[in-house]
Length: 295
Image 1: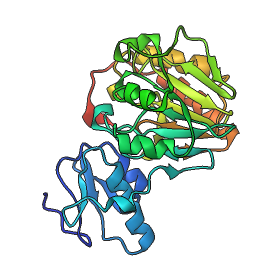
Image 2 (image 1 turned 180 degrees about the horizontal axis):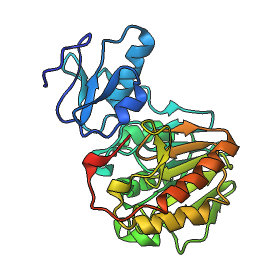
Image 3 (image 1 turned 30 degrees about the vertical axis):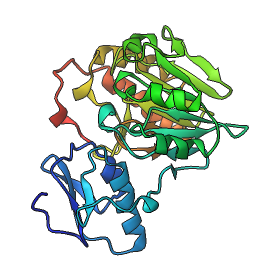
Image 4 (image 1 turned 90 degrees about the vertical axis):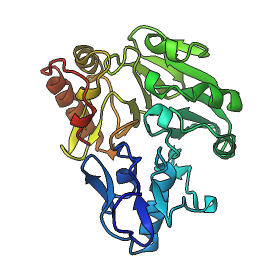
Protein backbone atom coordinates (compact mmCIF):
# COMPACT_ATOMS: atom_id res chain seq x y z
CA UNK A 1 0.00 0.00 0.00
CA UNK A 2 1.12 3.56 -0.48
CA UNK A 3 1.64 6.30 2.06
CA UNK A 4 -1.76 7.98 1.68
CA UNK A 5 -3.54 8.58 4.96
CA UNK A 6 -6.55 6.24 5.31
CA UNK A 7 -9.89 7.91 4.64
CA UNK A 8 -12.37 5.93 6.76
CA UNK A 9 -10.33 2.88 5.81
CA UNK A 10 -10.23 3.75 2.10
CA UNK A 11 -6.90 3.73 0.24
CA UNK A 12 -5.63 3.63 -3.34
CA UNK A 13 -2.52 1.54 -3.86
CA UNK A 14 0.32 2.03 -6.32
CA UNK A 15 -1.04 -0.31 -8.98
CA UNK A 16 -3.17 2.61 -10.26
CA UNK A 17 -2.51 3.25 -13.96
CA UNK A 18 -4.14 6.70 -14.10
CA UNK A 19 -6.96 5.50 -16.35
CA UNK A 20 -9.33 8.12 -14.88
CA UNK A 21 -12.16 5.65 -14.22
CA UNK A 22 -12.31 6.25 -10.47
CA UNK A 23 -12.21 10.03 -10.78
CA UNK A 24 -15.24 9.96 -13.05
CA UNK A 25 -17.25 7.88 -10.59
CA UNK A 26 -16.17 9.66 -7.41
CA UNK A 27 -15.54 13.31 -8.34
CA UNK A 28 -14.54 15.46 -5.41
CA UNK A 29 -13.27 12.41 -3.53
CA UNK A 30 -10.56 11.19 -5.91
CA UNK A 31 -8.19 13.36 -7.95
CA UNK A 32 -4.99 13.00 -9.95
CA UNK A 33 -1.72 13.45 -8.09
CA UNK A 34 1.71 12.67 -9.51
CA UNK A 35 0.28 10.70 -12.40
CA UNK A 36 -2.21 8.51 -10.55
CA UNK A 37 -5.39 8.71 -8.51
CA UNK A 38 -5.38 9.74 -4.86
CA UNK A 39 -8.06 10.19 -2.22
CA UNK A 40 -8.77 13.81 -1.35
CA UNK A 41 -10.79 13.29 1.84
CA UNK A 42 -12.93 10.76 3.67
CA UNK A 43 -16.47 10.14 2.41
CA UNK A 44 -19.02 12.02 4.54
CA UNK A 45 -22.32 10.64 3.36
CA UNK A 46 -23.74 7.31 2.27
CA UNK A 47 -23.90 8.69 -1.28
CA UNK A 48 -20.16 9.34 -1.16
CA UNK A 49 -19.51 5.85 0.21
CA UNK A 50 -21.55 4.47 -2.71
CA UNK A 51 -19.47 6.52 -5.13
CA UNK A 52 -16.23 5.10 -3.72
CA UNK A 53 -17.63 1.57 -3.86
CA UNK A 54 -18.55 2.09 -7.52
CA UNK A 55 -15.02 3.33 -8.20
CA UNK A 56 -13.58 0.29 -6.41
CA UNK A 57 -15.63 -2.19 -8.45
CA UNK A 58 -14.87 -0.38 -11.72
CA UNK A 59 -11.12 0.07 -11.16
CA UNK A 60 -9.26 -2.22 -13.61
CA UNK A 61 -6.31 -2.77 -11.26
CA UNK A 62 -8.45 -3.25 -8.13
CA UNK A 63 -6.37 -0.50 -6.54
CA UNK A 64 -9.17 1.00 -4.44
CA UNK A 65 -9.68 -0.81 -1.15
CA UNK A 66 -11.50 -0.34 2.12
CA UNK A 67 -9.66 -1.79 5.09
CA UNK A 68 -7.38 -3.57 2.62
CA UNK A 69 -10.19 -5.35 0.79
CA UNK A 70 -12.66 -4.79 -2.00
CA UNK A 71 -16.16 -3.96 -0.75
CA UNK A 72 -18.50 -6.92 -0.28
CA UNK A 73 -19.88 -8.26 -3.60
CA UNK A 74 -23.40 -7.55 -2.39
CA UNK A 75 -22.54 -3.82 -2.58
CA UNK A 76 -21.54 -3.97 -6.25
CA UNK A 77 -23.75 -1.36 -8.02
CA UNK A 78 -23.08 -2.51 -11.60
CA UNK A 79 -24.61 -2.45 -14.11
CA UNK A 80 -25.25 1.16 -13.11
CA UNK A 81 -27.93 3.20 -14.96
CA UNK A 82 -26.56 6.34 -16.60
CA UNK A 83 -29.79 7.15 -18.42
CA UNK A 84 -32.98 5.21 -19.02
CA UNK A 85 -31.35 3.65 -22.10
CA UNK A 86 -27.66 3.35 -21.14
CA UNK A 87 -25.98 1.52 -18.28
CA UNK A 88 -22.34 1.42 -17.23
CA UNK A 89 -21.01 -2.12 -17.08
CA UNK A 90 -18.28 -1.24 -14.57
CA UNK A 91 -15.58 -3.83 -13.86
CA UNK A 92 -13.19 -2.26 -16.35
CA UNK A 93 -10.53 -4.64 -17.64
CA UNK A 94 -6.75 -4.33 -17.59
CA UNK A 95 -6.82 -6.11 -20.96
CA UNK A 96 -8.75 -3.22 -22.54
CA UNK A 97 -6.52 -0.55 -20.93
CA UNK A 98 -9.26 0.08 -18.37
CA UNK A 99 -11.84 1.16 -20.93
CA UNK A 100 -15.43 1.90 -19.95
CA UNK A 101 -18.09 -0.36 -21.47
CA UNK A 102 -21.82 0.16 -21.79
CA UNK A 103 -25.14 -1.62 -22.17
CA UNK A 104 -27.62 -0.01 -24.56
CA UNK A 105 -31.31 -0.85 -24.19
CA UNK A 106 -33.22 -1.32 -27.42
CA UNK A 107 -36.94 -1.46 -28.24
CA UNK A 108 -38.43 -4.83 -27.46
CA UNK A 109 -36.31 -5.32 -24.35
CA UNK A 110 -33.04 -6.53 -25.84
CA UNK A 111 -29.65 -4.91 -25.27
CA UNK A 112 -26.37 -4.24 -27.04
CA UNK A 113 -23.00 -4.22 -25.28
CA UNK A 114 -20.54 -1.56 -26.43
CA UNK A 115 -16.97 -2.69 -25.74
CA UNK A 116 -16.54 -5.07 -22.84
CA UNK A 117 -15.85 -5.22 -19.11
CA UNK A 118 -13.48 -7.82 -17.71
CA UNK A 119 -14.61 -11.33 -18.50
CA UNK A 120 -16.48 -13.17 -15.79
CA UNK A 121 -19.30 -15.67 -16.24
CA UNK A 122 -20.86 -14.26 -13.08
CA UNK A 123 -20.84 -10.76 -14.54
CA UNK A 124 -22.10 -12.01 -17.91
CA UNK A 125 -25.03 -13.68 -16.19
CA UNK A 126 -25.78 -10.48 -14.31
CA UNK A 127 -25.75 -8.37 -17.48
CA UNK A 128 -27.82 -10.95 -19.34
CA UNK A 129 -30.45 -10.92 -16.60
CA UNK A 130 -31.47 -7.45 -17.84
CA UNK A 131 -32.61 -8.91 -21.16
CA UNK A 132 -31.20 -10.72 -24.18
CA UNK A 133 -27.94 -9.19 -25.41
CA UNK A 134 -28.02 -9.49 -29.19
CA UNK A 135 -24.83 -7.68 -30.20
CA UNK A 136 -21.37 -6.90 -28.84
CA UNK A 137 -20.08 -3.78 -30.57
CA UNK A 138 -16.30 -3.31 -30.52
CA UNK A 139 -15.10 0.22 -31.17
CA UNK A 140 -11.52 -0.81 -32.00
CA UNK A 141 -8.76 -3.31 -31.40
CA UNK A 142 -7.64 -2.02 -27.98
CA UNK A 143 -11.05 -2.95 -26.52
CA UNK A 144 -11.49 -6.34 -28.20
CA UNK A 145 -10.01 -8.59 -25.49
CA UNK A 146 -13.21 -10.13 -24.11
CA UNK A 147 -15.51 -9.65 -27.08
CA UNK A 148 -15.67 -13.27 -28.16
CA UNK A 149 -16.27 -14.56 -24.64
CA UNK A 150 -19.21 -12.23 -24.05
CA UNK A 151 -20.66 -12.78 -27.52
CA UNK A 152 -20.52 -16.56 -27.06
CA UNK A 153 -22.10 -16.37 -23.61
CA UNK A 154 -24.97 -14.23 -24.90
CA UNK A 155 -25.29 -15.94 -28.27
CA UNK A 156 -24.71 -12.47 -29.71
CA UNK A 157 -23.08 -11.13 -32.87
CA UNK A 158 -19.59 -9.69 -32.43
CA UNK A 159 -18.91 -6.56 -34.54
CA UNK A 160 -15.60 -4.98 -35.57
CA UNK A 161 -14.16 -2.96 -38.47
CA UNK A 162 -11.99 -4.66 -41.07
CA UNK A 163 -9.10 -2.36 -40.18
CA UNK A 164 -8.84 -3.98 -36.75
CA UNK A 165 -10.01 -7.45 -37.73
CA UNK A 166 -6.77 -9.06 -36.59
CA UNK A 167 -7.85 -8.27 -33.00
CA UNK A 168 -11.10 -10.23 -33.44
CA UNK A 169 -10.59 -12.50 -36.47
CA UNK A 170 -13.61 -14.59 -35.51
CA UNK A 171 -16.01 -11.63 -35.48
CA UNK A 172 -19.48 -12.39 -36.79
CA UNK A 173 -20.03 -9.05 -38.52
CA UNK A 174 -17.33 -6.91 -40.15
CA UNK A 175 -17.82 -3.30 -41.20
CA UNK A 176 -15.83 -2.33 -44.30
CA UNK A 177 -14.83 1.01 -45.76
CA UNK A 178 -15.69 4.40 -44.29
CA UNK A 179 -19.40 4.76 -45.07
CA UNK A 180 -21.84 4.64 -42.12
CA UNK A 181 -23.76 1.38 -41.77
CA UNK A 182 -27.09 0.96 -40.01
CA UNK A 183 -26.59 -2.23 -38.00
CA UNK A 184 -29.98 -2.21 -36.24
CA UNK A 185 -32.99 0.06 -36.12
CA UNK A 186 -31.75 3.37 -34.77
CA UNK A 187 -28.13 2.23 -34.40
CA UNK A 188 -25.44 3.21 -36.92
CA UNK A 189 -21.76 2.30 -37.06
CA UNK A 190 -19.51 5.12 -38.26
CA UNK A 191 -15.97 4.07 -39.26
CA UNK A 192 -13.52 6.61 -37.87
CA UNK A 193 -9.94 5.58 -38.68
CA UNK A 194 -7.37 7.51 -36.69
CA UNK A 195 -6.83 6.26 -33.16
CA UNK A 196 -6.45 2.86 -34.82
CA UNK A 197 -6.92 1.86 -38.44
CA UNK A 198 -10.26 0.22 -37.63
CA UNK A 199 -11.72 2.60 -35.05
CA UNK A 200 -15.48 3.09 -35.13
CA UNK A 201 -18.11 4.93 -33.17
CA UNK A 202 -21.72 3.85 -32.73
CA UNK A 203 -24.61 6.32 -32.78
CA UNK A 204 -27.94 5.33 -31.24
CA UNK A 205 -31.20 7.24 -31.70
CA UNK A 206 -29.36 10.44 -32.67
CA UNK A 207 -28.69 10.78 -28.95
CA UNK A 208 -26.01 8.39 -27.69
CA UNK A 209 -22.58 8.55 -29.29
CA UNK A 210 -20.27 5.71 -28.19
CA UNK A 211 -16.92 7.05 -29.35
CA UNK A 212 -14.41 4.42 -28.24
CA UNK A 213 -11.11 6.27 -28.10
CA UNK A 214 -11.80 8.63 -31.00
CA UNK A 215 -12.84 11.60 -28.86
CA UNK A 216 -14.07 12.31 -25.33
CA UNK A 217 -15.09 15.06 -22.93
CA UNK A 218 -12.05 16.66 -21.31
CA UNK A 219 -12.56 18.05 -17.83
CA UNK A 220 -9.26 19.90 -18.14
CA UNK A 221 -10.36 21.69 -21.31
CA UNK A 222 -14.13 21.65 -20.67
CA UNK A 223 -14.54 20.65 -24.29
CA UNK A 224 -14.47 17.71 -26.66
CA UNK A 225 -10.92 16.44 -27.14
CA UNK A 226 -8.87 13.73 -28.81
CA UNK A 227 -6.08 11.78 -27.14
CA UNK A 228 -3.50 12.93 -29.66
CA UNK A 229 -0.59 11.60 -27.58
CA UNK A 230 -1.93 8.03 -27.80
CA UNK A 231 -3.07 8.00 -31.41
CA UNK A 232 -1.71 4.67 -32.63
CA UNK A 233 -2.53 4.90 -36.32
CA UNK A 234 -2.64 8.47 -37.63
CA UNK A 235 -3.68 11.85 -36.28
CA UNK A 236 -3.95 13.00 -39.90
CA UNK A 237 -6.44 10.23 -40.63
CA UNK A 238 -8.35 11.07 -37.45
CA UNK A 239 -8.63 14.68 -38.59
CA UNK A 240 -9.98 13.53 -41.96
CA UNK A 241 -12.43 11.18 -40.24
CA UNK A 242 -13.77 13.90 -37.94
CA UNK A 243 -14.09 16.33 -40.83
CA UNK A 244 -16.08 13.69 -42.75
CA UNK A 245 -18.54 12.82 -39.99
CA UNK A 246 -18.94 16.18 -38.24
CA UNK A 247 -21.57 17.61 -40.61
CA UNK A 248 -23.83 14.57 -40.28
CA UNK A 249 -23.23 13.25 -36.76
CA UNK A 250 -25.88 14.51 -34.33
CA UNK A 251 -25.95 13.44 -30.68
CA UNK A 252 -26.48 14.63 -27.11
CA UNK A 253 -24.34 12.21 -25.09
CA UNK A 254 -20.65 11.59 -25.70
CA UNK A 255 -19.87 8.17 -24.23
CA UNK A 256 -16.18 7.30 -24.66
CA UNK A 257 -14.06 4.34 -23.72
CA UNK A 258 -11.50 6.62 -22.09
CA UNK A 259 -12.06 10.16 -20.91
CA UNK A 260 -15.18 11.59 -19.36
CA UNK A 261 -18.81 11.34 -20.39
CA UNK A 262 -20.92 14.40 -21.05
CA UNK A 263 -24.45 15.38 -22.01
CA UNK A 264 -24.77 18.47 -24.17
CA UNK A 265 -27.64 20.21 -25.93
CA UNK A 266 -27.75 18.80 -29.45
CA UNK A 267 -26.90 22.11 -31.14
CA UNK A 268 -23.94 22.63 -28.81
CA UNK A 269 -22.69 19.09 -29.44
CA UNK A 270 -22.87 19.76 -33.21
CA UNK A 271 -20.89 22.96 -32.82
CA UNK A 272 -18.26 21.50 -30.53
CA UNK A 273 -17.71 18.53 -32.85
CA UNK A 274 -17.18 20.82 -35.84
CA UNK A 275 -14.74 22.90 -33.79
CA UNK A 276 -12.92 19.75 -32.66
CA UNK A 277 -12.55 18.60 -36.27
CA UNK A 278 -11.02 21.97 -37.14
CA UNK A 279 -8.57 21.83 -34.20
CA UNK A 280 -7.48 18.27 -34.94
CA UNK A 281 -6.89 19.28 -38.56
CA UNK A 282 -4.09 21.55 -37.31
CA UNK A 283 -2.29 18.85 -35.30
CA UNK A 284 0.91 17.21 -36.40
CA UNK A 285 1.96 13.59 -35.79
CA UNK A 286 3.80 13.04 -32.51
CA UNK A 287 5.30 10.07 -30.67
CA UNK A 288 3.02 8.11 -28.38
CA UNK A 289 3.31 9.49 -24.85
CA UNK A 290 0.94 8.30 -22.13
CA UNK A 291 2.23 10.94 -19.70
CA UNK A 292 0.91 13.71 -21.95
CA UNK A 293 -2.76 12.71 -21.57
CA UNK A 294 -5.01 15.47 -20.24
CA UNK A 295 -8.22 14.13 -18.78
